[in-house]
Amino acid sequence: MPELPEVESVRRSLVPWIVGARVLGVNVRRGDVITHGQLRRRSAGARDDRGAQAITPSDLLVGTTIVQLVRRGKQLLLGADSGRGIVIHLGMSGQVRIAAEMPTPPGQHTHVLWSLETRVGACTMLFDDPRRFGGVILVDDWARIEAGAWRGLGPDALTATGAALAEGIRGQRRAIKVALLDQSVLAGVGNIYADEACCRAGVDPRTPCVRFTDAGCELLAKHIREVLAEAIALGGSTVGTYADAQGRAGSFSDRHAVYGRAGQECLTCGRVLRSAVVAGRTTVWCQACQGRARARG
Ligand SMILES: [Zn+2]
Image 1 (tube, rainbow, N blue to C red):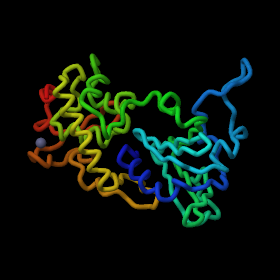
Image 2: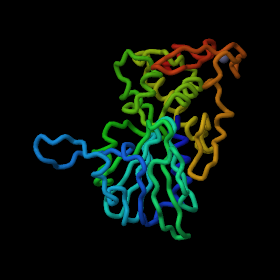
Image 3: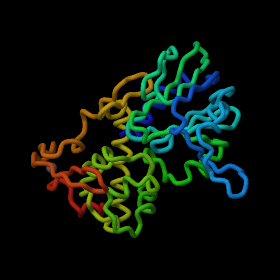
């Protein structure tokens, strides 16, 4: 599942193509991947369910120029000069790709295709998602996204401070791993980088949040920022099918210290790494190197 470093790698690979590009047309092959991010004025009693037929080309930015491509956590916002925008989230298996030509026929899992006119010629941006946990969210006013589609997201994990982490987990009895996966605490961390950051910080991922002091939060936040930045520098982690918009895999997967290594030796002490299901996700740590005491910083 793409996390912050993978989505940031997609963003960076898209910028040269789509920022400044004019949207000439759109081809929606599966309307159910598209949802409205903001409530619209509607008649009393009407359901907020406009269905695929109600989506217009201008909702998907046709006739506008894309002027912004920003990321918050694991989501991308494409903002147009009209004020409208779209948020793309990749879910488990989503991909945004750039192709020089409109593929005919499109792939089985290609749900939306945009034809773009860029400074260097025409191209197509495609949204693919075999498992369809990702999607496209329509945004009426991208300048107000923080009060709209992104209102539930915590601070971006790439720049998260210890104070923000401390604020997000204060008084909670749940395990720190559970809190790190909660996008309202920090936006962008998923299973891979939660385990890798806990490993670097020497923290047992099952440690209750209430055990963390301000110093413990500072230490963990520092390791979260560092592991995310290192992963971005290597194009993210390719686990499964992830690739950036130009089809390049990420190589941070070769650097994983614990994720995906249950039963193998700890790279630091050589003991066998333990695993358990925490927050419904397989969680891997070293019993010797990662303790609950490190929550005190
Ligand atoms: Zn160890």
